[in-house]
Length: 199
Picture 1 (cartoon, rainbow, N blue to C red):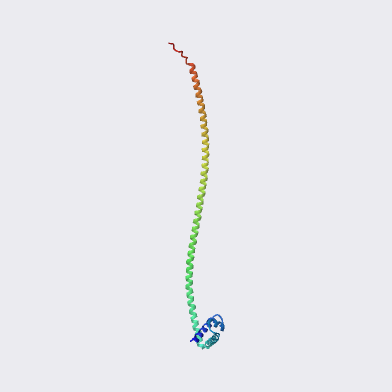
Picture 2: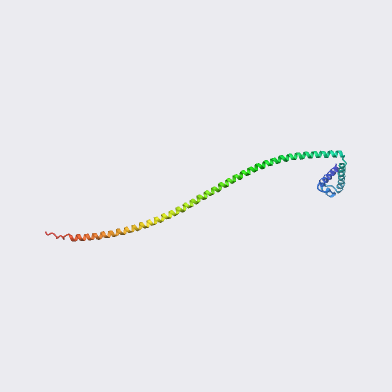
């Protein structure tokens, strides 16, 4: 039983190694974990059995080989037919999906164009409003400056008029005082001097 287990391990290691390279006693011994003698013995048996199996396949009767080839051709033809049908289905689904995506892209592009146009119009309108506001502000500033200048001129003129009126008032008061004094002096000259009464 133990010998069979060693043989199985050597055979399994040889199969694994042969998938990539030609198995040797050293590689099989290391992979299977067996002695050098077991690896040599069972690797030789494995090669003999493998070569014998190849010879048996080569010696297969022509009728069986022909039937096998015909069966393989039928299977291959059916596989090609199934693959073609599946490819057609996948291609149709892909084309439908592509058409759908193309429609979505066109709609998004149209929406983008519309949004860009609206944005440009909005920006243009805002610029116009800003320019109008700036113009109005400049006009208002100019008007305010003119009004301030007019007010300053009016204030200066009023101050000059007030000063002139004050000067005229002072002159009038002085004249009135002089006239009053003159009148008093004239009255004093006209009235007779009263003599004191005698008792």
